[in-house]
Length: 252
Length: 284
Image 1 (cartoon, each protein chain N blue to C red):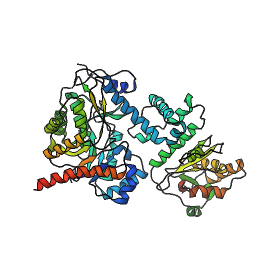
Image 2: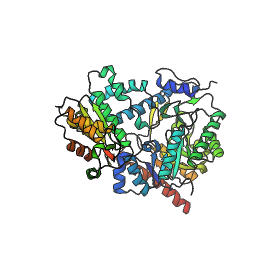
Image 3: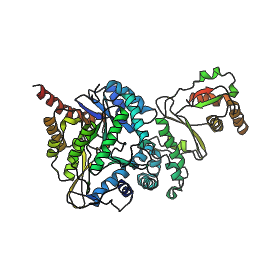
């Protein structure tokens, strides 16, 4: 009689040929094909989790490529938590270094957007700042803006937002965009929204999200881009539900 | 209030695909069961819908990631998340599996089998105690579907479950599809299994569809797939279970290749019919 340790069982789930010691069947002999059911279950569950979280990434590369990439990812990245909807946080950076996808330089950015989408979907509820709240600022230039709990900016060196949006349709048309995009993902109410920010507003949004006050964020944005319009940019971000609250005091 | 208050009706697993249909049509169904881990995010649509649906129907909270059969200690952070859900939604029942799914820091995303020995019995009973203490309620422990046996096992599965229940006061969740799967896979008579099972401890029954394959020796191997309707042999075994132990809250599980709402609801109505006939007989 041989005892089977869970360490050995767990390791064998990810090894191609080995089977833990101490397994048997009603026939009285171990059967590799039966252990393979567990190996297959684990693999199918994890691939399904990644397919569910990265549908556009999958659509771009196709099922076969995606599955092979998922296999390679899983080999290096076991889920750390039973909260399987969090699995795949590291897929975007994995894609960056995944040699077979090197020709698709935008793929990691698309995956980053999709990972952020799930994060926004499951994020905490929070108040949503309204444009009418802006009038209450006593010293506007000293104010900081607290991001909504679901809000995040994804800075992409490729037009990942445009690619992602095009892939929400049944048929994908050719994409004209080619430059960098800063994307706001936010779920102010029931649904997750993905917005490609106007180029001149991207730096301003970034600065506000990292805790700069309104004055400093606006000044820097203006110094970098003549088309930046302070009021339009702020009201625009607020209207998209990017913020939860205004913090009146303090400067950076 | 009792720890198990699901109605003696059929219910189904709650799927995001069906949120809209359920809220719109308010179907006459006994309860909804949710996989606890899918509702462990901080907020968002899952909670938004579960809140509305839990106002309309009893909820059964079913964990798939606690790893009660693990060699290591229970994950206290996960236990705290379960406690939070239990307090927020006040489910009519909480259940988990006689299985393990985590090893050290890795989550293995499957319900893995454990040998039945005095040592594992002691450990599982301790873990069940810990869960019940943390949640402040009794739980149901589910019989697994398995594909392998362990050389070191010395205790019969039913005796093992019975002993855990006797030691901890937990109830049992009898998955009739798992009984069929394991019985075929290990050359046992599924009817003999049901006839020996302590049905008085059963607080809920699960039904699901299995897949079929062959093992290395060409023997029929059933796989617990949850990807189709309940098959006739499992329905027949279910009727036998109800006839023998009396009607119990019954869940139809369908987690893969999820059908439209009407198809799933029709599956629940089948089980409801079996329960209604059994209840009528009991009254008569």
